[in-house]
Amino acid sequence: MTMELNGKRVVLGITGGIAAYKAAELVRLLVRQGAEVQVAMTEGAGHFVTATTFQALSGRPVFTDQWDARMPNAMAHIDLSRQADLILVAPASADFLARVAHGLADDLLATMVLARDCPLMVAPAMNRQMWENPATRRNVAQLAADGVGILGPASGEQACGEIGAGRMLEPEELLEAVLAFFTPKLLAGKNVLLTAGPTFEAVDPVRGITNLSSGRMGYALARAAQQAGAEVTLVSGPVALATPAGVTRVDVRSALDMQAAVMAKAGAADIFIAVAAVADYRVANAAEHKLKKDLGGVPPIELVENPDILAGVAALENGPFCVGFAAESQNLEAYAQAKRQKKQVPLIVGNLIQDGFGGDDNRLVLFDDNGVHPLPPASKSVLARQLIEHIATLTGAN
Ligand code: PMT
Image (cartoon, rainbow, N blue to C red; front, side, top):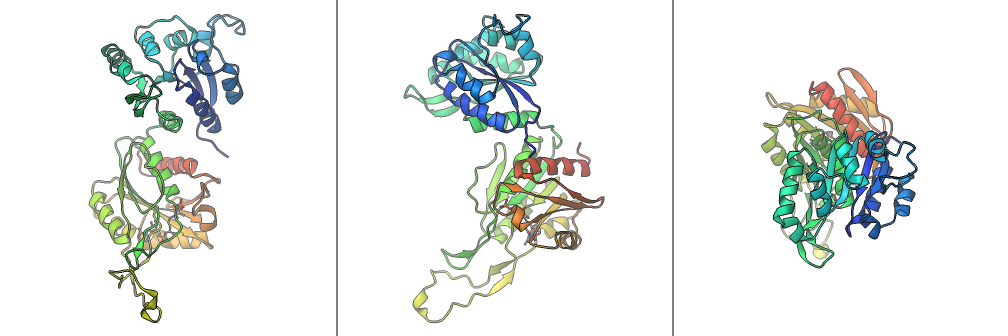
């Protein structure tokens, strides 16, 4: 399966700090996404973690010494940094930030950073007083001014027991930052509005009609659009997913709530992507109090049709470019084309329920004016990236 960082070469620098143990998970995540990871450790890092761990996880020898005899030309700093698309230092200690801010080259990692011709990102990790110290503030400001990406730190409980800013971002957050870095900004300046997840149509205060949409496809698209440079608003039905970084999320429950939230934002949107599995019907006679079994007979539930949110947005004058989804259990092409026609949208994304509902992977077929475009089966994140590229091409955004 296609991975998101295939062919990308990342040098991961690890400096001395308790958060160094989290770098092991970061290497695993980067490698799982297809990145080639070359680890370089400072001497200080070696007091917290061993090179053996990182060699095993990255599948490559780890470098710590500028004079490493494994480099035939004795130029580890040049050779390793020239091969990189990105240098990420995580954790980056206060001492390391100070050395880089001042252009020092007193160990292999600092020398690589000074000799690099690729971007540098750092994930600071230190005690909160060290982070707040005016000297560190000056160094971080200098690094930012020099174009270094500063990732975090987060606030919270620290290894020393104190509470405050200085915790390294979690490995998953750092992976997201790396993915965002490598994503072409095809939707820069665009406003993207999405719906995702199921809706929940109340029967009484505790029961309702819903479906098995997990929200994963819509959330993956929101994340891919944000990483492609768009301003993203995600109108979400009830799901158990974390909001993608940098995305504005509006939580709703019913189709009517979803329609109101979408219509409030649609005027400002350039692109609208309707991924939600919206209930076709809602309960007209929802009970104010919990329905009781002993009332005699089966409670009558009257259904009334919900408004079609996508068709409503597509009908707006000067409205956004609209993308619909169609989940079918059979006859995908015929049903998807019929939905494209009925809702009057330029692009419908078809998927089979057995491929797409719930899980992490999917298989998408795109139907637009130019024809039918099947995408190979892949994870929802990879497909989301490909779909965003297709939308950017259709809208002339890239
Ligand atoms: O959430 P996951 O578990 O990741 O699963 C993803 C998915 C399978 C739910 C998703 O990929 C998908 O196919 N979503 C659309 C589901 C569907 O078939 O919807 P529909 O046929 O009822 O509607 C067609 C289109 O109109 C959809 O874009 C839908 O969002 C939109 N619609 C439908 C009804 C309605 N009242 N308002 C709408 O906007």
